[in-house]
Length: 138
Image (cartoon, rainbow, N blue to C red; front, side):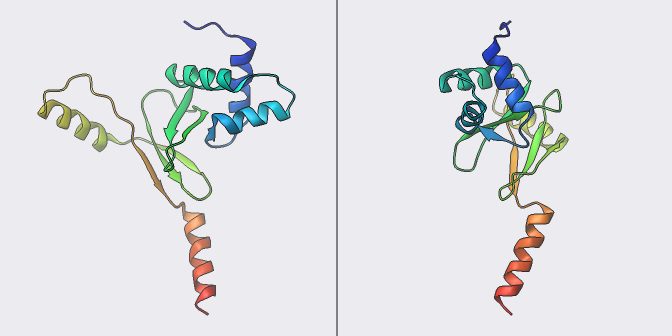
């Protein structure tokens, strides 16, 4: 078990105060702006530890960057993520779980794990985008 250092607690608190997903570099900048002397490597390490322990969600952005947020749901879950505003909805995906187990077993794999994050536009961003497109065609 990892011990709680002031650095880990600072990262945890900053993550708790952040809405949505954030990169390690952006979180590091936030911490520095508030006067923290914490190093970037320490932020990366603390975020990795928080994700490993289930205290933070971690996903990869469409650009390949690791993003983190304080986890509000315990246990395995998936996300719907708006690629415009970052709105994130935690979802259960029983069909995905069944499919993953089936495909793994079909190929002789056991103990398979997976990550499923679905990126799209939320209802509000879709509405705003549609309104903008309608204005362009008027």
